[in-house]
Image (cartoon, rainbow, N blue to C red; front, side, top):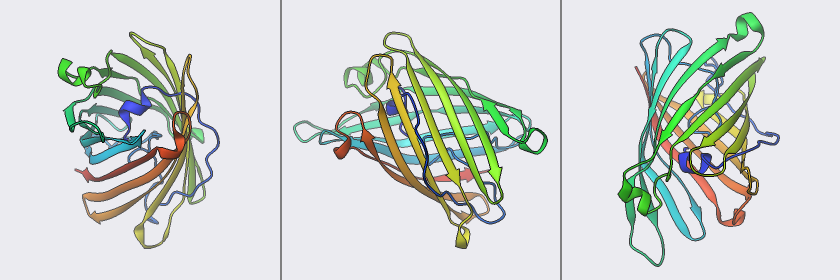
Length: 254
């Protein structure tokens, strides 16, 4: 989310009221197209590549990252390596379209508890966000400074449903540090559709809480291809009534 630029200024999640659905034989999960991540990994030697257009509208301006490339590789059954670059665009009514490379994320997820043995699945996923080129920073299309993020993720299955939570601390090199948290709930739906829902909230150490409510879906297009989409709204923080957020993309599994 998607939303890597918005997530870098984030704090607390409230309560999720939603339904998220997977195919009957699949495991209910978060991650793209949601902001909140789960504990899943691709499996040893496997790839999960999410290619999308994602963004938001704030103050009359559209902020879009396209392509947004979330590239994941499984190293063993419990470790996931991630590289997440993107190309950012801003469309404003009183200026020309601006484009540039946004900040890039490098992450490692380690699932240290499995639900079948511990009753709950838990993982940590430290990642680093590096600033984009100086031209993108001048246009405010990239974070102006480096950032280290330390998330804790947990997922629990209840019959065909599953619920998850992610809490993270953002350590920003030059600026206020921030908290972020999100919750999701997932349940199988008919016809192989996944209907996803979350609440994800954020707050920097001297700022207001920003909360996003998000609904999404997944649907398999083939053995190795999945359709991803979500649409949400910022319900608190700066200009919440004019701040829809979206994600539209595909997931490639190899």
